[in-house]
Image (tube, rainbow over all chains, first blue to last red; front, side, top):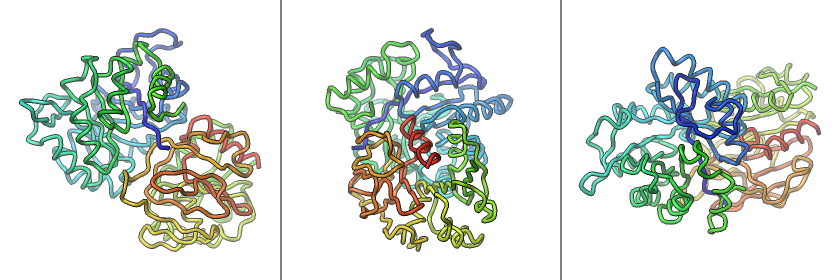
Length: 251
Length: 193
């Protein structure tokens, strides 16, 4: 049976350091490649690397990091942050990334999704949606959550799916950083409505939150950062817990 | 030992090369039949669209070379599908080495089939030391049907061939280069045939 996926997310500064890593059982804490290998060995199903600086000057360091990750990691990984053009996607895929995640650029120019899917295949185009609930409605935000758009999350998700997106990475800005659990309602709406997988992100704090987002939120995958980086629990512990509770996972 | 990766207009070829490097088998990328002829093992990878990939192979005479070779060939994902008789993806005739049709998943679930799934009813040298129910990584919208030549079976919406073997030809629908240690073992089994 197809399993639900557990995806650690690594926010990388200047292509060098993973932000917010607090456990110390690694020789080089914070090295994106070492940390990725560690998670892969622990049983992570995929990895996401986000370039949180994403400036022109840092682009070379970023590409070099993606190449190093591709050399060392034996599971699929997605890269995101600052991907705006067909050329950016090509560069990332050539550096060895399996998928790219696109956010603001797609909102600015929706036809970009069609072009990327046609050129590289839907399977490698992940559309990241940062959504915030206001007055009962989920709105799409861009530019790291600073700009509100006129898109409702549901409409935008449907739009990019029709344009050829292969997967949706949905982050609830209301839940992100709270450690109080994922946004179950919007995750479930998208997961049940769309013919493509939905990755839930934002709010993971306890193992029960993952169980809920799979059971009630119907997510295909769940992404988290700090719970893993802080060592609150490990991926094997989480997967054992999910399996005991009847969720199909890769052990 | 010389390992060659058949290079054509499909994605994911570089990932396969990196995986072979990790295993200690540096491989050359080539689309020249003479270079392939000199290799001991050929890997035919690929993520992409069947018809344009087939056209590329035909332009370079790679289709004719592939069907006559006696060296071990491992088709991965689209590589496997092109070794089959016919693909529903843009109604593309394949190389016909595996007498199998490649079909589109029915629209009763999410497509592509993307993620980790189990392989079972394992047969043949590719799966030496691999347990029944091992997990491997898949990304595909078309699947090869079951056949008496099936050496691994997976179920997603329908049961299908996760691996097929005939003479010197091997094919896997999943991505061993992205399937962690299980995938590495399967690649190693092929390289050590």
